[in-house]
Image (cartoon, rainbow, N blue to C red; front, side):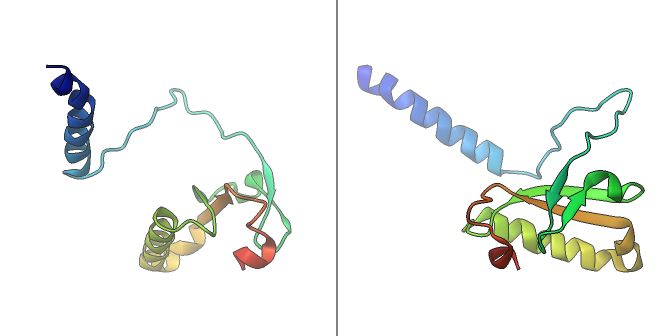
Length: 113
């Protein structure tokens, strides 16, 4: 009986993994009602120049968090972002893709370039 109880958390985790991985992803977020503007921030871009979020006003901003030594998810996200921006064609100019590093010590300007 104790052994079965000890295996219960593992069984639940596996069951959740199968459910979570089946079917299309579902958007999970919060709708701000009424909408509020994003807080402004300034970060260095890939060339080391300051990029201010408010400078992108009027564009759709796609914001993601990546790092250059990420072995699995980051290359997939980057690939999908390239695919989507290629599909936008002329509308691409209306979209700003901003990737913020979560490893600024290793993601130097040279590493990002």
